[in-house]
Image (tube, rainbow, N blue to C red; front, side, top):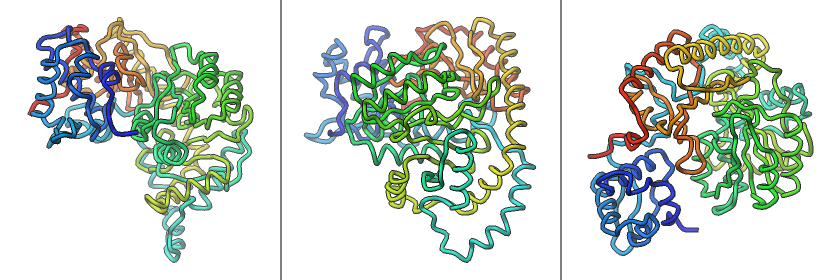
Length: 477
């Protein structure tokens, strides 16, 4: 499988050339935004001009002008006899990086659904870690499986949640995203199918694209999953892998029912699919009891469960884990050694100390999230009553329906008013979807959330329509 983007694939990601004039600039703006978003990978060959023109039902002259503009602005380059390839302009940063960086000085950051850690909790934990670190300083410090004490603690947490687990089934990683990348690298091959929800966690979708897997999507609506579609997709496409977020799904907030969990497990078993279950939000249950691990509802021989402290504690720890059959854990640890040989001992000791305090820390975090969710909901109802959403039973964000397909354009306007936020299209497995949605996290304090909504209302008051959806990041050199 070479690194070539097919003409039909690219055409499906681009807008209709007839929707704006001049068409070539309209198309170039859309393509550059896709490169910045990561939905078009870097260093891939774009289709031949004649083929893309046919797929877009436009003239070859339009496509030639589009490619010329992409080259002039630094989003593409050509090699004699080799075609045109995507690249990143000097001075521009991939959106996957910018969304993790701090916002502009005047911007409120609603792009990241990640809370901070209370200062006192961190201070207390650090005070306990010092003596333990001194003991470890006399050892080489390499733990490719993870610190043994932390592996045991994570295994015990799974057991207490209803899924009997031993430390040999745990691999400690540098966050759940690291765990996912290891799994995709070991079990997936370029061109393999992976079933994923639509919408889904944007960074996970990016990892799938970079592994060059073929995504087979199943919808998640405001009502949740249609399990018959999930079962039929497993049966008919027989994907090598499937990635699901059943617990307070990111971004919709939905919670998968108990009976449906068993059906998913049995369907994956019948198709021989490796099921990757992302549980990073599972403990953030605000209105319902915390769900049991999906793997506890049936046969789990080919189930890999991902977890992390980023959402329950702090993303700066970079501590995550996966639970899998012991043999697979050993294989993944071998895969991991080629990249980092093991995580930081001090981070793992700190994580262990925080996990031991979780029964004290988590209830306060949940109450804080409830207050912040209420503040965001009340502010939206007051200032932007035309938007609609369902209050999720857990998790960290609202999945808001704007009523018209202006999500990307609104995100650009909101930034100009001092709010950084993600449009729904960023979470889509397929291009062109969820433009009528925004994901709005409630991970900051109530006063800041209320101010963010006031700024968004001011942006909306300027007047926004689907026709303005071609507003893109400022890409022209």
